[in-house]
Length: 296
Image 1 (cartoon, rainbow, N blue to C red):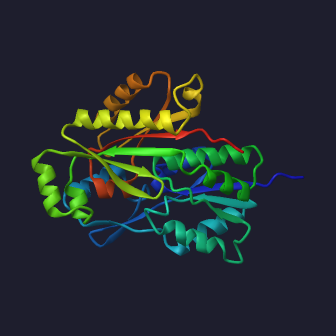
Image 2 (cartoon, rainbow, N blue to C red):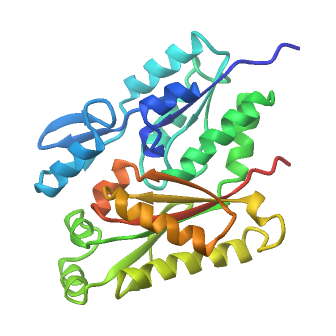
């Protein structure tokens, strides 16, 4: 039986650039942003540098979701060349774009050909799902099987993010002005977490180094209690990921600290996607882990 040709697509919330996507042989749907009443598309006419310039100049920045037309266009384009499409959008708990894609995939022209994975990932953990999907497609799994495997694996990841400022959470209405003022006065560095559905408060640190220690300990706890412990196979089973907003130099220093705390573990580093950066601002550092896919 001839193997199906499977196209893998995702959105730019994964942090995968158009250039990287071309190298991987996948497709990335750019996320739209409204900035001072003009629509921009991530990594098309909006670079990371350009975005932070807007943000720091107090521009009115809001996230949007890809239009149904842009999804339909990409589905058609890929189905002209492939038998099936596996689309891995950002977590359904953080945006409505997953729901839109799921609805479109049920339309008669796409049913049974387009498979939308709702595995509640974003940024570096979403990238890992894309790489896993590529590997599964190479091994001969079809779209329905890849969707099922990735969705069964959805909770095998964690992201912890330490913010440098409360300004953007306040601006986005995610915390009250009073809480932001108190946090700024006390120089608090909030640590947030993404596990599954949404962005939640995790801890409050008084200093940057305390926040880093909290993230390192949180990942240690996850490896110990959720991902099989620190046995001989841990370094093969768990992948660590570092992410950051704007400040790559700071992220490189953070990477060294993580490598010292987890010697011998595999580690990837990438900027956080702009849709997350929009809510938390520049200067954030993140540490994430994913467990290697186990196909049952």
